[in-house]
Length: 226
Image: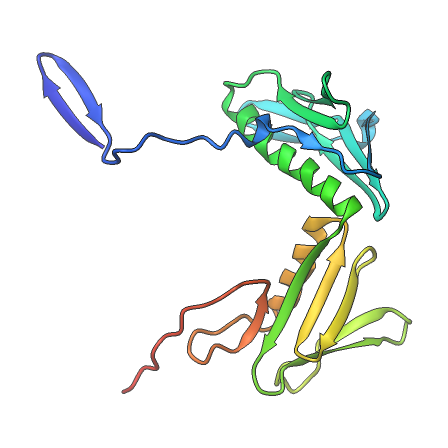
């Protein structure tokens, strides 16, 4: 940002010639897919979560419940967020906030709208993450532990075999030893579980070995020669 001084006033001029383009995600309606239903419930005060922003405390006192063929997802929302069916089309959900110009409410607007949209897709179609094992001998084996739990045994060249318990609500399949397909209705849990597996062998930039999630790529570096 450059500053021009002249005739007792200060003018600012941005380096970019284009104007800022807002996505306005929060204003876009959410289409309820056939087979899904929508409801809002009030959370009892003793079970409400809250967060502080500067000198104000906001309570997540309500939850949006999306039910579909694959399950139910509950999304907690603050009091200033309004979710209701459209007056013109009941199959469309509109998301609004009390004060659209308020910075915090604007941030929550698009975030919560995306979370509800993901819940609609997840309960009707599901979400998926693909985990790929790149490296000689790197693979994953689906098995059960001594407690009868489904686990993933990771062969990553370690002197031991890490075993990751598959959480409830998550389905894991292995089309081949070097690939896992993780499925579930909750997008956050699906991606989080994929990230947990990736932590055991992050992609390294010299040989390109490691565990990759979805379309992840890395830029290879040249080896340092002394």
